[in-house]
Length: 385
Image (cartoon, rainbow, N blue to C red; front, side, top):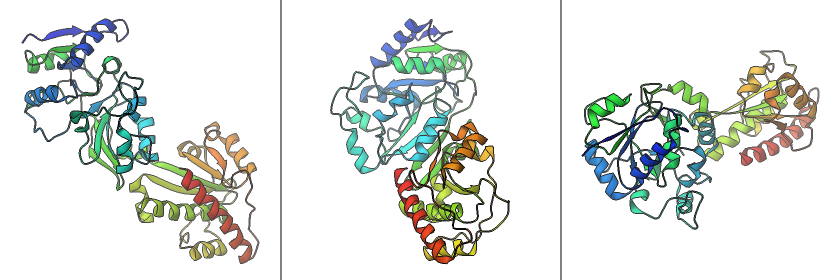
């Protein structure tokens, strides 16, 4: 077999060459293409093409390949936007794609049924996954690995393909993945149909792989991103704000941790592993003060522990890191927006359009009533996530 080499310098100017490569893959051919990590071998996800790819890679047929998409908005074709796409997963997609990150999604049984095609979608094929055994075979144990590369040539090429495309690294058994076209030619010339020469890969190392499931998140392979970076990218930060951070916002954080843990079926100390961080602070707080005794007592009566709470004064960095900010009053909301423009799109009242009065100085009954209002509002907000 003669392997055709296509030199691509610009993903827009050289679009006709990329169309030729995409047509080759859609016809069942194997095309090597560049990404920002390493070069990959593009293969149409059908039985005959995959059998050929298995032969090239000398790979166990039971092992699945990673699906590659050129636009992260195509994710919904393969992972329904139901309960399978959790807030941490959505955040990771938003921040990590396009980029050197492979995400393994767990699809629950209810959402899996949504993959059955009903009508023709925007890609010229049924919405969801085609009712084809090879495509459904991409889902192993109700999971699927997907990557949306950052490289412009890769994205343009993938978007031009009319079929679902898988792409393992471009190398033969026992050799390192190619990070430039010459490496790919030396290993795969005469074995694949085409090699797109898009220069040297940006990172020259494999993508990071993270799995997100009902059990939380797990880094399966550290690549360009470290485990710590991935944790920061996917963690959903929920921040509750009051004035002094000694009663209302600590109670809200305590109730939120309890509600989240119950919803996720985990212990409170496992929330980080599930992809959530709940915290509180105050607009004019003195750092290091514990929660009031009545606030602790109210939370304790509802099996929420805030006995170790220490007050914190709000900072612009806290606002920037938060994904959701819930305040007790309109005034606090205005103060946050004034402190940092980052707060405008993520800040809202905890109790819809109503302020929650400060119980400071009141008796236990005052705190109890305030706690009931806060807990009810927190449960509603958590359910909305």
